[in-house]
Amino acid sequence: MQEIKTEIFLGDSKEVLKTLPDNSVDLIVTSPPYADRRKQTYGGINPEKYVEWFLPIGKELLRILKPDGTFILNIKEKAENGERHTYVLELILALRNQGWLWTEEFIWHKKNSYPGKWPNRFRDSWERLLQFNKTRTFNMYQDEVKVPIGDWANGRLKNLSETDKIRDNAKNGSGFGKNISNWLGKETVYPNNVLHLSTECNNKNHSAAFPDALPEWFIKLFTKEHDVVLDPFAGSGTTLRVAENMHRNSIGIEILPEYVELIKSRIKEREFVLFEPKVAYERVKIG
Amino acid sequence: MQEIKTEIFLGDSKEVLKTLPDNSVDLIVTSPPYADRRKQTYGGINPEKYVEWFLPIGKELLRILKPDGTFILNIKEKAENGERHTYVLELILALRNQGWLWTEEFIWHKKNSYPGKWPNRFRDSWERLLQFNKTRTFNMYQDEVKVPIGDWANGRLKNLSETDKIRDNAKNGSGFGKNISNWLGKETVYPNNVLHLSTECNNKNHSAAFPDALPEWFIKLFTKEHDVVLDPFAGSGTTLRVAENMHRNSIGIEILPEYVELIKSRIKEREFVLFEPKVAYERVKIG
DNA sequence: GTTCCGCATGAATCGATAG
DNA sequence: ACTATCGATTCATGCGGAA
Image (cartoon, rainbow over all chains, first blue to last red; front, side, top):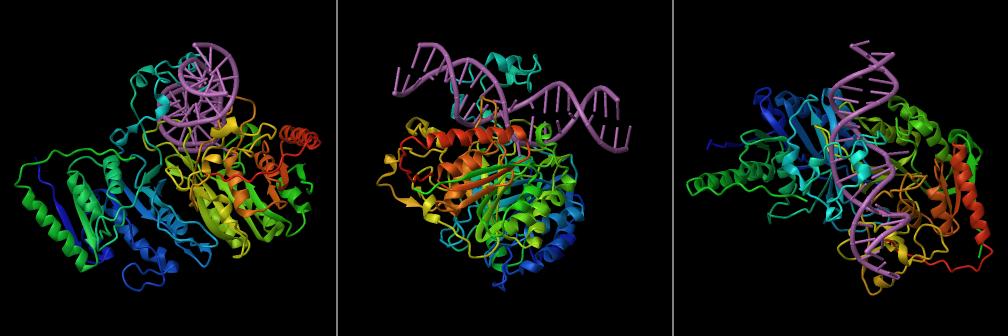
């Protein structure tokens, strides 16, 4: 089995990215620090300056990504003074202007969202998962993320309706039943663009940027084994760890030394484990 | 009991709205024609011209809405040639520029989204429910939309039709008179900003833009009895019918004569029913 | 009255084909 | 080349008739 490499760089993404070669990454999955004018430390980017702050990074990512690669950006605008900020909308427009294609917007529905109560709004239970691409012909391995078919299929799908079978022949609609074999014994279907996942706190010290299942889903969907996954805001290293488990090479960049040390120690631990008997990689179904 | 009035105007919203008085409406809930959709009926609006087309209407809506009222806009951008269009993002920015506050974005998760398969994307299963306000001190009756705690409670709207059997048949529509005994003794919680519900598939003539539960939820949340609800793109009249059932006054505008006739005939039918013994209006909590 | 089951039909999107 | 139209693909639901 070929070796899998996990790299972690300490430093500012804007600078470190410049050292990476053109067209070398298959997938970028990241959750950058959200804008918040109050925090002046990590994560404290002024909302008004957010687009300006991100664009140099976007430019480097565009250079580094392979033409058939994908960039997934997890982000959600804060509410401030009773309004939703518009910097995410502006960021989308600006990235398009930079040459990115805004291919899709997935919704991450957080089942257990942050608690709280306000007179003018309910709890925010979703985040944007923006998909950007360099070209229109990117890799997408849809079969890798198929999900079990809904209960409605039990018994009902066994005998397809006659009208569905002739829907195409009679030209009275859209050709359901053109390829009946697709439906016989069907147990899985393709998912849609809404992801239901719970947030998880797998680290007592650091709140995870996102649950394992999130990068896992996109890594399955947009890469194959031995491809290269990049997270320019690695944080506690969720994306890198998941990528490694899935036999993808990965590169992380993180500005905080303590996170980098955490990730490095885990990589070492991992290399030690490599001498032990291999555990077969097991594909996990995500709801 | 005070009389409830339901009005429907035939004509172009941009013009008809001018005849309505300032600060007279408590809630606007509408689903305007999407760009390039419903070409057969509405002719379709060019995506490039969408913002330009909508802004004059937005201006009138801003004038007509009460200072403590709310405007809910149901919309979703289309995908074309491998990319999501940006006109909805631009519309949000333009409406803010016009004086609207972009207070919140709810997600409508459509469980039964349109089928189809493409090499570059999955099925689109969500739409935007954009909330705009005139001021930061709008009315919001959060207790009215509390849901019982449980597996389907988390921000999830129970499909009204599930309880059709228990529904009071004398009332045509939105699930009032529904048996809520199974809610007794259950603890209730506030919902969040993700709404789960299916589109209603009609086997019959007229399809509704959105299911009854959608306007119902917002009417409960943002109005009280005898308030005024406006739908400037009334279509088959879902919003008006639901508003009427909930004892709210309502105003609709629709450009297609056949829809206006349909709505008018239903209003007449309704007035006839008024002579029959009144059934007490029963507030129903919808999950 | 229930429950079961057949069936029509969607705010879709892309690629091929035709003008 | 560029635009309009058409064909192919696909899933979940409520309705209504049957058991």
